[in-house]
Image 1 (tube, helix red, strand yellow):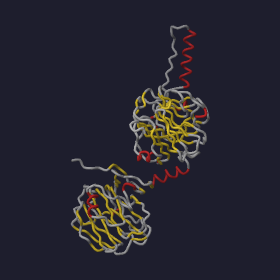
Image 2: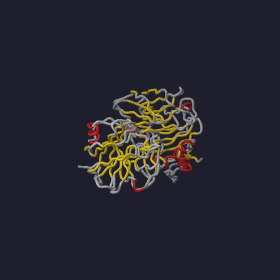
Image 3: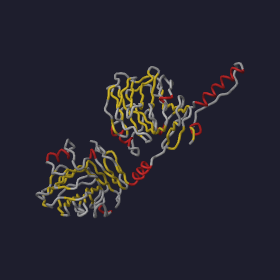
Image 4: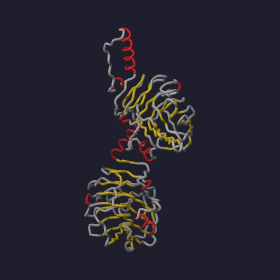
Amino acid sequence: MTAMRAQTKYKCHFYLHCCSQHPDTGFKMQLLLLLVMLTVCAASPQDLSGKMFTFPEETDTAHVRLTTSRQNLRAVTVCFRSFTDLQREHSLFSLATPSAANDFLVVKKEADGVIDILAKQNGKLFGGQNYKLNAWLSICSTWDAASGLVQVWIDGKPSSRKFTHSGSNITGPIIIVLGQDQDNYGGGFDVKQSFVGMMSDVHMWDYVISPREIQNYAQRFVSFTPGNVLNWRELEFQIIGKVLIEDEQLSLTMVLMLLAMLTVCSAVPQDLYGKMFIFPQETNTAHVRLTTSRQDLRNVTVCLRSFTDLRRGHSLFSLATPSVDNDFQIYKDDAHEQMNLHVRNQFVYFAGQNYKLNTWHSLCSMWDSASGLAQLWLDGKPSSWKLSSKSSINGPIIIVLGQEQDTHGGGFVLTESFAGMLSDVHMWDYTISPCEIQNYMDDLSFPPGNVLNWRALEFQIIGTVLIGDKQKSCY
């Protein structure tokens, strides 16, 4: 553990030169100046990634003052992580101006699970919050001056939205404090409101960030847009009193999660609207596994969009069960303008398909077990119906993008792998209508998949597969 004064690159310049005043007067003034600068030194912006502030004791003096040049805020989002065993009331974030000590304040109340958010001196209580002791919590609070609504998120779970104050911004020289509650501008600290514990990853924005950004922040190891008012990776701050900077402590669970994410990126359901999976190279390992709880399928419709320059055969969608490796597979054949569909290991092909290279294509495949009929739609144009299997799909289902499963969950071959981009993957347990397919093709409103939904997708990334913003042509 190292105190801040041993680590910070201070901008402390001591000018102890002779002056024309009386020697005693000049010495006393210089001494006072030196004492002040030894206790409060302004730090240059620092990257505190992997670090935390440790507040080791109750006090009415020790705190961290965060520096910003902003003087006018129409909206606020504040996110941070905290760890404490305090059961009494304590301040988590305090922003004051000369006219309002509680211009934006986040306080954990003594009552169990109650957070108090104050904006422009007006507070609202949020009960039923899962504020655990002796655990790292990700906390975000938002306020918008136009609507006056405030909200708190803990570990990615939102509260209801409540009204505090609207119609006026936070204005004036801003002082932001961690570790104490400002009862007046820059001071008025009370030991019984002080924070004891650890804080990390403090970010602040001058707008209300999206729920998706908050979810990304809460997931800890997922990329998010850093704060534009306060940024933990470029933080200007002052430490006053006994506050330490240490390496952040991760629980065993968090360490295991991080290690798992480095090899297999397992996500909670995510809205991938406007995103795409990028498969940047040919490989027999990299793929995306899509998660579903369905174990029985009598009908299937799969829709997706793809972009590639591959001339060889490649898998676009692979569904396997322990008994059948090609239970439902969409495959671009080596043959020119031919697409293949495997259902229950029965193969049908669709010739005359205008599958161009270096072009986004919208593709839907459907199959009905009662009739055994299967059909393919490419860019809004249907194929003829063809006879396939009449038995339903049963068993633990594994769905893979980027590879063809020659065995349940594996057996990948490099020369059948996909390289390019995939997006907008949906799957239904029924055959959707031609009008719904046309709406999907034209990027209009359609019922999202009830087996796989691109707007709420559960998936795992294995190997080198990236998520990027979807690229659209400009006209």
